[in-house]
Length: 502
Image 1 (cartoon, helix red, strand yellow):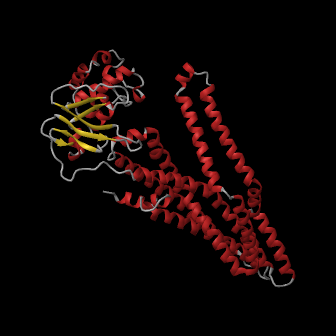
Image 2 (cartoon, one colour; image 1 turned 90 degrees about the horizontal axis):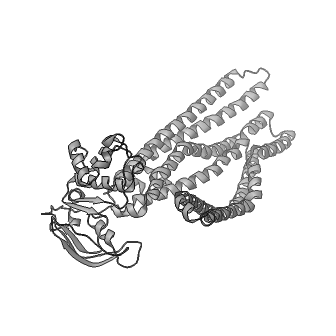
Image 3 (tube, rainbow, N blue to C red; image 1 turned 120 degrees about the horizontal axis):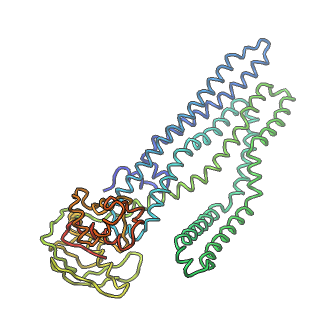
């Protein structure tokens, strides 16, 4: 069953779907930024009125100057309020996303987590959520301001003098046309850019992580060559992009800068002023306001890159959230006993063709020890991981105590099976608390009893602080064999009727 957050998150692909649960706050931040932009434009209009007043025979500009100061203060307050609100919304969205993803990962098959790998999942939960936080916090107020400012400026210019408004609009349209020329093939080039950058990141990570192997078997020429090739390909894409768009891109930035609009308004205004169809005060007002229309579009160009990056992060978050959870039985059954039966089990990994297991059948009576022996790749680990239901079988059934594991609740199944992985993992905590992981309420005597059964007690007491010694990051302060024995002690302490040693 999907939560309200998940329903909104999956309702529309991309950033607007992921941001759906907090769209009220985002719209509020964008509205405050838009109002602040309008107040800024209003202050500039009032400055034009100040100039008009100064040209009168009995000038009294004080009231207009006070109004301009008030509008400026309001603009600053609204801008600050929009960023405050957007940051609060961003923190709320970040908390909601990470909570929702963590709860969802607790419901998906463990096999999916193992096949996905910690790096890919970490990127989504940490990096992609962080990118969305940055987009909501910093970009949404700019988006509201950058969309509002050109529209309001054009409306004000049309009210003041429609002829000069058309001149400013013409310069803007020329800049947009040149910009579109500069952005041709942008999607294809950006996709190639992202792909080559990922290749560089992968080559760097591979080179660093494989350093012991590289230093033992390779002088660096083979592994470093892969990085150099990725870097050369990235340089080629970047050079092609710059070559294709540098001239038109620079031209677009020049046209969209305030100076061309100012020159056009000066020339057109001088002609109209000389003909007597334009007052000096109106001309000054247009000069003050007109340059803001093209200038306000420049942030939208930079925002397009942030939107594309945030959209990619949103799609990866939605892809992870859409992974189907492990089906739960409508009416859970309780096993009677702990004997294990594999009944004509067939299984195939989703990304591979052909069965890994085909009609496998055997029985493990309760209270016995059974070893699966065979060559690498014969399916021993697959059999072990199907028992605690890391995946569901394609055909056949696995029964514990006469009950199909698919008909048990996850809590019931886990209360019957303890699992020791090939790859050991210890938290950066004390040895005792690592052993207590499955039973945090276990006494110290029970912890020591489990450690003795796993033949770990003797080396633990020789550590600097005994059972209170911290294992280090991922158990890095201990040897591989020591970590393995601690994980076995953890399984023994759980005191479950079935222990799987993979």
